[in-house]
Length: 343
Length: 293
Image (cartoon, rainbow over all chains, first blue to last red):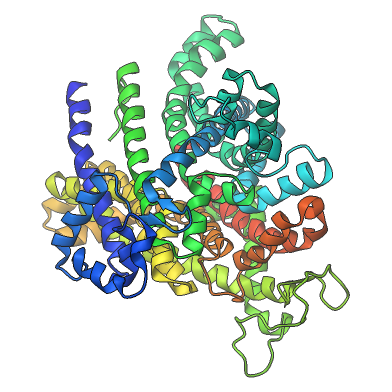
């Protein structure tokens, strides 16, 4: 146990170093003129013939290892360059948007895990019967739906026809409330902050706007958990101790709920943690379609406008969050269940 | 052909998902092959560039002339037909090349073990640490627009999945007695990997490849949808949906009026991905003995 955790911690800096190297070598394909934006802290300095001077100043024609060291030094100090899309330094642009993305990922994770586990177990219990086939087909169809196509359908039905879930992050009124001086920000997540401030109207507005993206992410994502829950449950149901439990006359309900399901949920728990983290990266499309504020839509806009500093800063941020998140998930599972050994 | 194998293949085609999947795939193959007849391109022009058919930028609903409607001055029907070829090209190229590379990395790591394995697997982990779509967005932005660059970006960040799978399988198979037997009669490393290890772990790789095909086509389309994938006006399903984006968000509550801009390219994409997923599902049911209960 100790060895496992120590090993994981030991590899952490190595993994982060590797990620930074991949990203570095990707953006080294850009010309020095394009890379300048990664180093400056305000746009005024980019005017006119200053660019050539800045290239010299930051040594953008030096050998790559010197450039890497210099860039890393900047990154560690939190200087990720200037974002043209955000009209502010990349680091603060990302930090301001992170709570919105985290909020969306957390709210989507709940229905994905709950629905996936429940339906997966059902599917296994009705193995090869009509219910199983129906669930599996709807899972495969969900799996095949690109999030941007499904997102458009959600917009058409729930916004255009029913008028329930408008796009955007906040309506004009709610936005004014959130930006006013009386509104105190505790977490940066509007749903929680609005409740803490006692503004139920803001909460309802932001929740309505969250519903569409959450619905989209859920439909696209629950199939994976369903598949894991189903096959794990099937495997457990074939075990000897289940037969023993049945043969000693235990009620079927007890056999399934106590003996089978609990053991079958271990792999589900493992992937659930990873699902939450993967959702963070999956918000690029959904945030764009529903016109929400967040790191995903920020990166998408930056990519379209060739704002390289923002794209690279965003990917670096996602990489670090993913590595730390996965480490946290794996270590906590290793602590909870001694049988879990992840490579 | 042994009777057992014949039975397996019969089961593969007669299962519901297998039958549906293979039929859909056959349909798409026919559409891709017959594209020049289904949607004749203007003479002497690159058929993959959707020709301008209307001068007004406003989308037009399906009519007898343009049965799927008009988007971004282009005929949606034309884009859907020729886009089938783009989808096949991206899916097959990326899957084949990334699987080959993944096979190499996974086989070397799994077979030699120890330090070689450790190093290769840590590199794999690092590539897996960046979310796939995010990595593809960065790479595609840097490489610039064009379907070839999309293919490069996707290959660069998708070889890890087969690599991990094949390594795990090899670790299992390596301990089997027939490998020890082969080694004891003096078969060399390459011979053992190629003749004995790979054939025995090829089915999981095929299943995975078929499943990945779908997600790769979705990711490629997502890049085009975001405007950083295939070049503008290239016949590509994601690009067709990109036309829809501004009308959907800018149109206020009028989203529904532009349904045809989403439904036709979207349906093509969903069915294409579904076909590969169904085939993968059927392959797994037939070849993965662990799921037989």
